[in-house]
View (spheres, rainbow, N blue to C red):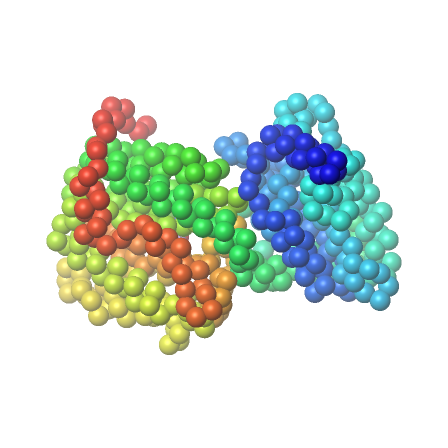
Length: 449
Ligand code: GLY
Ligand code: MN
Ligand code: MN
C-alpha cells in the first residue's frame, strides 16, 4: 500500500513534468519485449531512445523514436534498452538504462526519472532499471556467451514521413567491438503492423477527436477565409480532445490546391464555387489517425463536382465492400483493392475529352497507420486481422479545378473490417444538409504573408 502510494506520488510529479500521455498498460510493452528477446535469444538486443536533440524540434516537444516507444512506452530521451532472451546459460533479462539526472538541465526540462529513483521499475514496467554508465559492463558480460548484437539500423531508403533515424554504428562498435550487428527492423515492423487492442483504443481516440475536428471545419467553411484558418480550427478541436499535435502536416487544399496531393502551405483564400480537400488527423497517445473529406466552400456541390465526388465515393465503397483478411492494398492480382478501385474509375465517368478516370487516380489506395501516419506495412502483403489501414481513393483533375479525396481509417477484423471513422458523414447530400446549418464567422481581415 505504501509502495503504491509512493509510486502514485512520484508518478504525479513526473506526469506533471512530462505531460501525461495516455499509454497502453505497461504489461503490453513488456510482452512485446519478451517476444522480441525470445525471437533473438542467441544474441543481445540493444535499442536506443532518441537523444534530446534527435527527438525534439524547435516547434514541437520531445517525441520518442517509434520503435523504442512501441517496446517501452517511455518518452524520455537518452535511454537504452538491453534484452536477453532465455538460453541454456542464462534466464531472460531486460534492463532499461537511464541517463544520470542533471538538476541544472532539469531547471529547463522539468523532473526526469533516474535509475536511482526507488520506484523506477514500477513506473517504467521494466524488471530492472540501471544507470546508463553500467551499459558497457552489462553488454560486455552478456557477450561472453553470445555473439550477435541485434539492433535497429537506419533504413536504406528513408521511410516516408518517418522521423530521422540516427546511425548508431560507432556507439555499437564501442560497446561490442567485432561482434556482428544484425538489423531487427523486420521483426519489430512485423509486430507493429498487427495492432493490439490497447493500440486500437488509442487510434480510436485520435479518430474520434479528428472526426470532431472535421465537423468543426465544415461549420467554419466560407469563401473569404484562409486555408490556415480551417487548419487552426481543426487543430484546436483535436487538442481540446487530448491530442498533443497533428499526426502530420495538415493538408487543406482549396480550388487548384485540392489537386495537389500533399499541398501543405495553407495560405490561400477560399473562393466561391470551389472544393476543399481536408486531409487532417490528430495524434493521441503517440498514435495517428488519417482522415480526408472534401466539401464545397459554399456548402453546395456543382453538378460536375458532385458527379466526380460520387464516383470517388462509389470507388471507396467498392473497396470497403471487398476489404477483409487476405486482400491486399496494392499489387495487381485479383485480391488487390487498388485494382478494384482503378476498374471502378475506368468504368464510371470520364474527363472532358472522354478519357476514363483511372488515369487521374495517381497515388496509392492506402497505407498502414499506427505510431506513424505511414506506419510499417507492405501494401502488397495480404491484410490480416488487427491491421489498421486507410482506404483513400481520389481523383485530381487540374484542368477542371477539381480534386476529390475521401479517406477513412479501417481496422481489419477476423471476417471483414470496421471503418473506425464511419461516424464522419461523407454522403454528399448529408454534407450539404450539415453545411446549410453552419454559422459563418466574421472573415479574416489579415491575409497570409
Ligand atoms: N495524410 C497523408 C496521407 O493521406 O497519406
Ligand atoms: Mn493517408
Ligand atoms: Mn491523409
